[in-house]
Image (cartoon, rainbow, N blue to C red):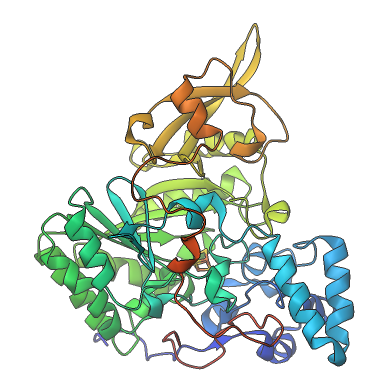
Length: 477
Ligand code: SF4
């Protein structure tokens, strides 16, 4: 720990089993506590001491955006499912029924959106590679097996399937050997995104084993680390026992001539207001890493232009780069959190207009959909009617990148699938947008996709999402 920093707080994660203690400490009403308990049978629930004491405003619960962000809420599941969950969970004799029901509800929540399992799993010499995704030409996603939890769980998480204890739903690589072999065969890959979960739940020693081998791969120019740790546990970079070690590791990446991009996830400006978060960002930047910030637009959490304006300004002031405003993905409690595209454009543009030029690095609203990243550039009013102006920011097929198209305006549409693509769209683009399977040789067939999961022991207990209730920061993978 560096001199001048406050004494270390030990990381403690809390899950459903600590809910009663949380309720007593923070005055959580009984009905809210019971709802959280019930919903957490299906959706992952995990918070920690820092989230509870620095981020949630308990005077505003249950409407507080940080409470909505981290505690499962009534309305996140279909009403009939919630009712059935209540009945089954109240009867200790129905554990098997409850387990099957929970599995059924999860399966209906689209656990792997955007064709992740069907199309993103790369193959090498005919075999699927566990814990990797290769969607875009130049970027590979790498899911180290020991980094597949987070310091707290976002209720809107698009990777919630990583946390529910079902090995068939999980992307996880046991070690970097498969990644290195794949990179050797694919010199077009310049960027490796180490992701999860959150790779920063790993001790520095473990993280090092995944990062250092990349430094010898000449074709890789950028190592990205996707993390929400600055928001949920900034002590990872300040007072944790190995906080200094992780900064030295970052410096080593930079010294090796690679760009280190910390892809930081901030959902609300409050996450950047705390002293630990500001200090963490300053220490990360001092290593030579560049911090890019991104988050989805979420009803009840940040669906207000003033929130985004404050967030992007705070990021800029901290020396970080506002990067993406995403559209809430079509997975998990999507119905609860979704913001129609028409409203998303209004929010993005209203916030964007308030920004100084240096913060206008941000792109949005962006749908990370099956064919690629689609940005809604605006709404066009013509004599034929009103249209969303859309553009492929990124695509599985590089030939589609940058291509504009349009779709009739709708006040309800909240995802690409809800739009009717204009019939005048060029055939190759239209086919991709309508969900034609991608052509590259790396695409997995649907029948082989499940091999991408590491095998594990499926829990015979009902759901029990991995709340990670143990006291250690390290994922017990
Ligand atoms: S930090 Fe990211 S991976 Fe973790 S729960 Fe939140 S959205 Fe999901």
